[in-house]
Length: 134
Image 1: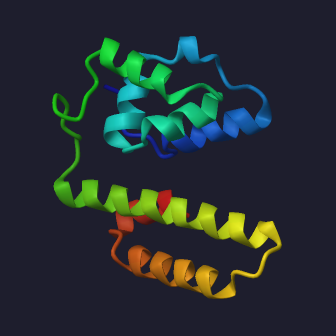
Image 2: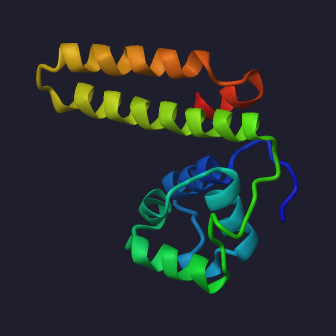
Image 3: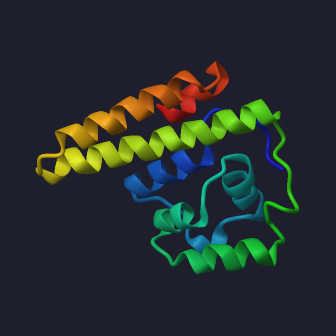
């Protein structure tokens, strides 16, 4: 497995994609996929979005390397694991909030509800995981 990183792989790959220097899906390593799926708890569908591929390709690659939640355990404590899950939920909520704001439609109450849910989740993220959600 990989060493502890300051920048999550998910964020690193998104940045590489935005800069136009994302490596091809075929070159993603087993360690990188373990990091994304097991350590960072990134779903196949979100991994697939990075490379603009079908999520079935991600699942097939994971299964080929026997990377499954039932066979792998995260390196951190369960508090860190829960904090990681909360951080991911906060990221997803922020994406949804941005999507609704960008749509130009009137969704003020819904956006307000999402922003409140995000604050509640953020308040429960351990400090060590908070930077990952920002």
